Length: 299
Image (cartoon, rainbow, N blue to C red; front, side):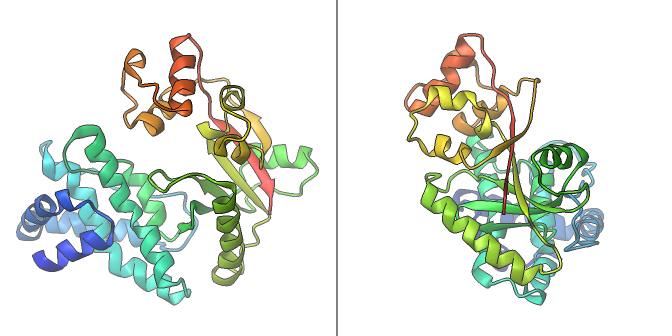
């Protein structure tokens, strides 16, 4: 189910996997194709991922490889996504998704391989369940932002109802995500993404009427507006949203993970090179906390 070695290398490059990890992943890929037990497990994992492809499932829990810890265990989910690729691309073609959007959506795999190397110094994959959204036909990269087909839950539907917005639990909504490594979060880039999303979902998922966008992110913590300049991209991004609800549970590792690359870094060691780094680190060093913000706006 995996391409041969040279084709595997090309596929990995198409998926945005960093060049420095290609040779190691091709080498380990031979072990997967040559071992009957691993081939069988790969086939079962791909079947679980692609069963219900295109449905709104909220992601898929891939089975754990019962194998000694090491490079193969770290990298095996990459082979699951590579082996599922023909199914995913066929689904994209069937509903008319343009090739460039399909390619950029699925290349988020390579971004997460890069995150793993930045954090651990070796090939591997972080957030494998997250990537099942991309490879399950639930999430698309549209310009600067990512949009996930989802449904209103009880809490968000209640918050929107209080604001006079008709959104019953279970009705469609778009979850908005902000990927790293894609340049500034400028208002113009966000406007272009939202315009693309309006056209994209009306054309490729016409039966799903998306009337609201939601975002659940530390970037919506209102404390950022206290610590950053009013003209900063993050503050202007926050201004698009109405508050859906507030969290009382601190989520301090979230900004540390996304700003500095590793959620386990010691607070005392966090650098202060940019306004955002100073905002995140200084509040934590002063004994404060960061929280996940929950926001929405009508489409």
